[in-house]
Length: 339
Image (spheres, rainbow, N blue to C red):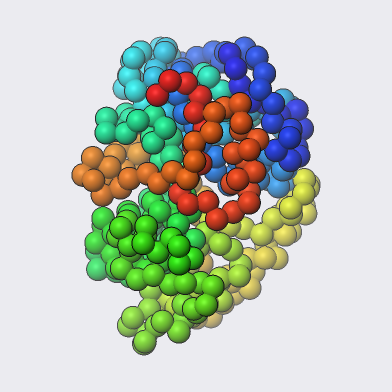
């Protein structure tokens, strides 16, 4: 099968198209012929070696998390899927010291990580959903305990996770504020944002009239630069949930990796403790059950994908460059098969 492999950490140029053996199905596995994948920031952070302190991997590797395709074969213990089903999901590619992700014509994923592809979405649209929507769902609903009537602020709201978070929060009955550049304001209004904040010239804490108008949840997709203002904008008891942790830009050992993360988060953790607010890092779990819940929002017309650009698999390096440059609106999709 064709797959994009990397023989080492590095820039987009390390990604190369190659012929590799198709994966084998275990008892709980589902073999999917992939029609589309996508590029998430975690993909190029893995490629650069920024997370190498967590794992020691054996090269070559295949990066990529999201997939949408058609079931080719199922393991002996699989009960929910059968050959011919259209499914989608988010794969954690690390197994032992290997990493086999979704930038490939065929992928084996655990049954528990997949869901039926919404019939209303093409494969290219569906591939834009899993990781971003799971991140937003698990952050807002599971970690944030979001309730109807609460106030939510989404940083980097026009990004992949942001556009999902705005729609999910609105669908669940929240008042939603969003930070974004002015060119993205109209899109976010259409997605359900009640209030738009131009982060290039406005301070979010100055938009808060009193303690009662503060936010119950702030979802941060930016990083340390917004933590101070986010704490000021939170109600007492509110939660600042971050998707970004300070880590070394280059490959590093565990000691440096964890040292950088702890040193970067320590001030925010201390501030949360002394102000009666909460601070936590979002860590998502690939779960088909959560995707089924997200499917209900898609089918009700309350959640839709936003796609910046579609690249063929052969241009994966260009797709990574675009993602790494920042300011992507929604998701970058990678077309792998007919879909």
